[in-house]
Image (tube, rainbow, N blue to C red; front, top):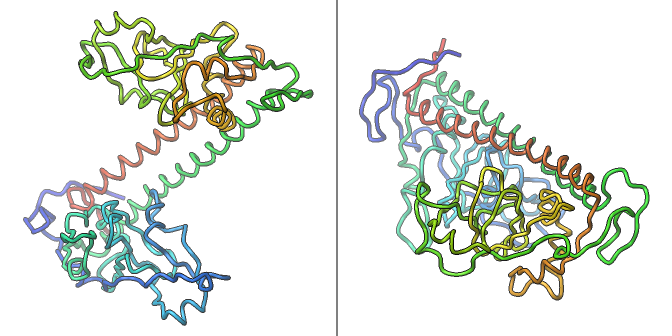
Length: 426
């Protein structure tokens, strides 16, 4: 497939497009309609076999353009409610309610029934390709055309008047093929991420309750664990302190003139989010020794996602923390093992449900000092942390690859749908 840069443009109501492209109203190349009143009674869904797509099903779409989640209605619903069937290949998007602002689009992979809060674009002209039209509408912000009513809405006459560029059909088809290929790669990346996340969840369940290679187990106050493991209070094995609590905005400064500040907003189960880092003055750092943090400290959220933990990375040689609990591991603890255990579902449930534990969603030092922890020998802690870190590294790599593909897709849409870059058609 050959690409080339276009140099010959003309001005149109939708901006510059190649001179040999046309411009059309949607009503000239497609039949515009809305869907059906949604069935309400359970009897319409019993033994259902026909897809019925609602607005929320589009909300759940990620990069996949074909709805894969929907309700199923039966013949009784179709006949009694006189539901109209929407043809395979039609494009749908929200036309009423706040969901319009999400700018979701989908193509029907099969004949289906859709709710009347969705607009239906059925390409009727032999001169228009539905994939090209889908990607153009994906780049087109319908929320810019909302009527000023209590409930945000787009009426059908407004949608009929929307303008679209129109290359010749072979070029439309090529553009649709290129963007679909990128979409397929993104979807493949999504599948790998989902599979790796399931693997991670299963490994955490196995490794953090059964360890590695154990044959004998014992019952303890916190559940069944390998016989060689111990149950200890966290405060007996680590130093637990709380970071600075109080107003801090007056101490904020620039990156070049300050010390990194970590707070609850920087903590996630995927580690420390450095892109949201703030900075405080050196004077603040000098005055608040107790809330200083260092590489390999574990910081735990006190509010919000209370109990979520992350290890301070090596890249932060010094720092301050705000409204988090600091766990400084002794020589008997591996920091990453502590992080994984706090982010483990069973540990989180035990922490939140502990009677003498969190109050109004706040986790404090007294809670954590008394919190009982299963401790393998140090070499096993490190092995468990290493296995889970390997899976996390794969997840991070796949997420970066997906982000890269999404940037490529956006770049291609910006170039191909405006004609700045053309595809040579034989």
